[in-house]
Image (tube, rainbow, N blue to C red; front, side, top):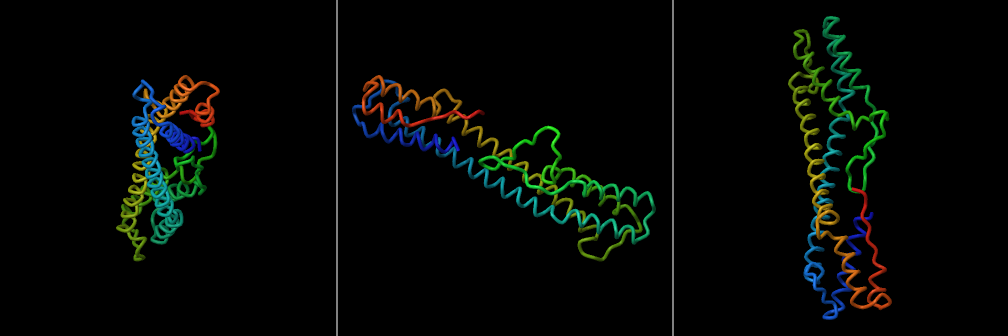
Length: 239
């Protein structure tokens, strides 16, 4: 991962500059050792925030996947119970349509990048179950509304009662919202990291490049100091 390499490279660069002691004395305050140490600390903090946000996102998506795993079979049980209760054909037709929409999405894993955020699928690719959670909720809620308003529907099985089904709808919405909130937090953490590392006026990579230029000018192109620092590589990934 280029982000980790950049962080490690800057830490090494700071160590080299610190080892030069008084011989390293740039006029630009942003290139001085103390300023570099502060920038490194900010960069490390932003990286930790990204990792924490990614872990929270993974937890939210895992919880949602577990919470949705039973919904397809549950929708079939609800439809069968509605049919067994003698509901009219129109209600059964609407319930069947909702059930088919729920079953129409398959379960596959969504590919993720280095810190957990979902990667966009190519245009025209078949949507997976994990990208259809909103659709699942919509049609399961519609199914629950159908049975809740049908006077013939009656179930004594705990998970098939109207109250239990309505609680399930609320829980599914909560699981979806948790993922949305976690994704927003992850995006914000990445934005802060990218600003400190690549976008701000005195960002991590640009500062490192300026430090190398200073060492080359102060000690000479063929100096041991410059040759040592020249081996430390930095890259700016596409943002």
